Length: 240
Image (tube, rainbow, N blue to C red):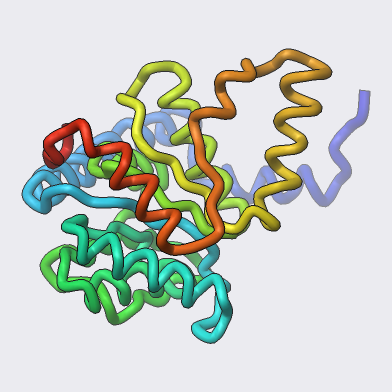
């Protein structure tokens, strides 16, 4: 069995030098109230906004990048169709989403997260619809609970996390089916091939029907049409 080296042991001792286990456990218990406060504020403020679509994607995408411009266009068209836009409030694709909402005249919501990097808030959020979170899991619930669909642009780990969270909740009937739109077939194609060939064909870890939970598109019009066609048979209601 591999043992910790001396430097690693010293680092652990330093971290716990002024705390015993009961005090650490007590500190964790008190954090419940901070978590609860974020849920209460999020529920109170998000419930008043109305029908929205969440836009996910990389915070590192530059304003002149085709993905930024495409996200901005999609968000503007969705906004003009009556949906508010929810993003993570930061730069990149999030900025593009909020910018498109502003141009379309709908609610522009920013669910900001406190991080050691990529924390700059974009200027296109509505001041009264800007929320700040310390906990990722609380923030993710707000994204999915108050969205009538999600647009997933190319991105990194955070984008993948949000995508698979949504897919898992719909797959397991923990939330009603809603449109999950992946934009840019070139970017998403290899991931879908891996799902089909490795997860389904080789291992049967997911069902073939699970690939119907999302739609891949390449244009702004296609993305918006997916949402519009999904809700043609429904009266569009907020937060159902």
